[in-house]
Image (cartoon, rainbow, N blue to C red; front, side):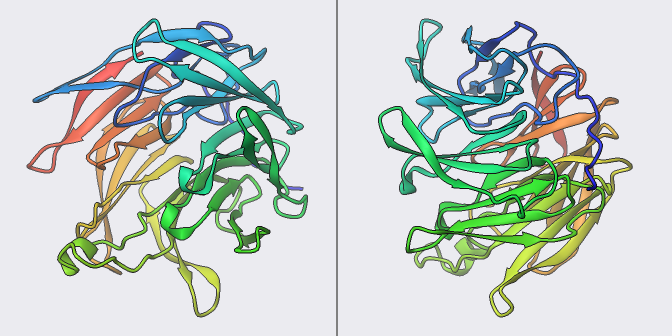
Length: 368
């Protein structure tokens, strides 16, 4: 079977072995790349706290704690309320911590260790709490698992993808906006993307976007549920119709925008975004808050980050170079409001960027 080759990813984060660096988040959550195998470190960012005062924004490390993992940590995610942290590792386990308090004296308590994957676990993602406590994970073992908490600290598998869904490593996962229901998208090295949705009867349905990217698919991100301009069109009074769209990135140096067609019950490619000269490592669709613009950020092995904008539905996507970092860029994360972008790269830096009124993107903070 064809498996996309995985390039070593130097850790963009701290080096304390088997420790988790806790940096509480307010607006963005940069995450460790799922293919980080280049170093022996098991450290990772759990989150970031951005302290904003007028034009000043800074990042401060607040705490670190032992994770208990015995190999590299690839991802760390806060839940919706910022009270729990999930970590995943090359040791094939997922650990969930209760995180209490807001200061450096905060207590982190391990409440669950989840086992079920047969390979390194690249990524974890919490679903919206509207549907209960669900955590998704993806792994080198070609599998996606959705875990559900039945009682405090007790998680069981609510869904495990069949062996026929993906034929190679599943590299990335992303939950859809809660308006779409309990729906998860995944990107795989077999070149396909998949969408897993929970039906009304409690069963799960999985569909594929075959051949989404040649060689392999590396990242996936959902568009906001409300279409651009819905806030203006509705005057802010009526609920806007939801639209299912997502963006994927791949080893063909492309990012692709997809839209779900209700008539054919299939995902159809809308646009192919061409600017990178090497693998696209991550994609991130920004919140638009109902305003008449779509914005996507992409980063790549070529060391570049591009900002893509679409000013009208069905219109062309225009791109602007945010920065050339001179080293592979692994991960992207937008703020909740969609106007601040965090970037992690192979220079072992997390930088934070904000758009000025003249459309120029300025770096406002950085941390190692």
